[in-house]
Image (cartoon, rainbow, N blue to C red; front, side, top):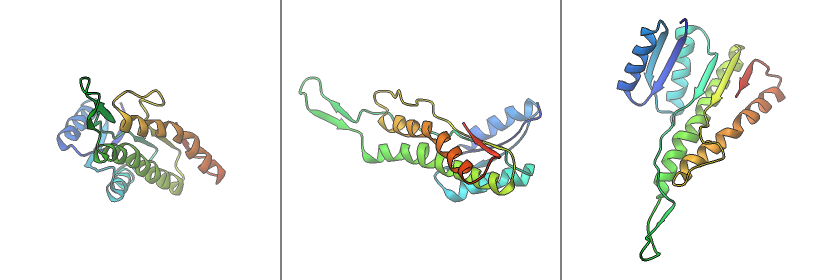
Length: 167
């Protein structure tokens, strides 16, 4: 199929499985354990793509976690809050789904601009503005990502960069 892919994930078994599927389909693949909330890990993943294949043309910011829960869960009998989403639950999802996406988009843009390669950056936003009850953390992050293509393209085009697109 001719595709050349670099994968990053926290799950080595999942990485091995997907890399094997890509190879079996005739593609070339490199995989590395990557925590998207780490500037260093994401930079190393982008650099791996360049070292292995000579350039970086497409980056998909698709890492995500779900820690569903109601912001406040009210007991039907007492009418009182019996449980609430913790700040740590909210922050964990924001860190991976929003901050991780930011780091991925930023590091890809740096390399595409500096390399002068035609590039496409794709921040994945599956929920957009519709959201789901019980997913305040997840939907907040994904709604933000829905705005990014306009901002990324505006920033780059405003500085004369025409080789990088964002959708």
